[in-house]
Image 1 (cartoon, rainbow, N blue to C red):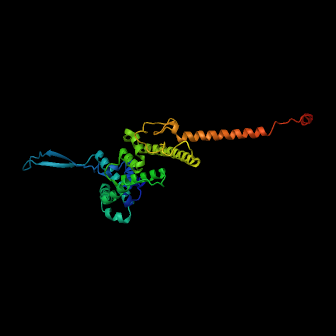
Image 2: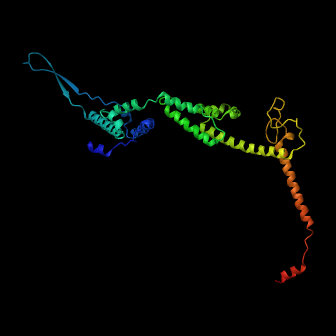
Image 3: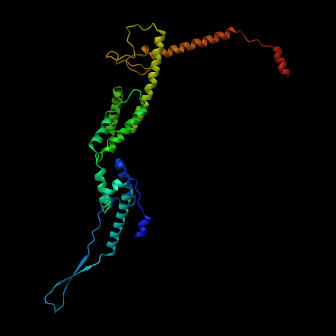
Length: 321
């Protein structure tokens, strides 16, 4: 029995009181591998083995009165094996728990005689999460707002870190659902993303947070490219001061009203104006005209140089060589 225990030792990660939940999760997985988890959690109590009682009737005629003679029979071999196996598993688990504790924690449980008693005492001491710490974690998570100078990827990383911290401090409270995470994330992006949230429709209730993060990143990159193009168009039109648009004429990229909301540009795929008023289309046409002018100038320069003269003497000499 002693040799078997020396060959099979359960090793646990050292307990840090501030990380009790992580330690408990790791320890449960280890005890499960060694088949001692039910003993540690108290789901498998110590087997109660009672000695069998045999009752025989006395037949001695010289006795003053009939008496029942009771004899205790020893426990069976099968019962003894079950009891020995349970005690061995309990001893292994108890030794593992005591070995992973520092002195401050060890002094609180060293007198307890079973693994389940030690486990329950540690859970009672370090398991409950204070309401203050949970409130702080949830407050930081639900009040997070994306800053303009923060990139979308950094914001997602910060949001995920806070979400994991909230789940860690919830203790026995169920973890955040996907819909709770999705709605909280979209709210953290600010009012400028309200139209994106509306475009999600019922999908927001079914997709995973990781999928939502990927779609937001892709949408943010696409909008960034469109904003850069729009900025170039506006800068070009301002610099050249086109006279074909009067001062009081409706700007195609201004805030939409009821009159212009039904208009749709087939070139830039945006609402509020038609293709004739599209600044992107005008900018592209202007660039094409400038390119055509440059090509025409190049042709004129080539024409001014005159025809290429052919030196027949040089050709004869080249053939001789």
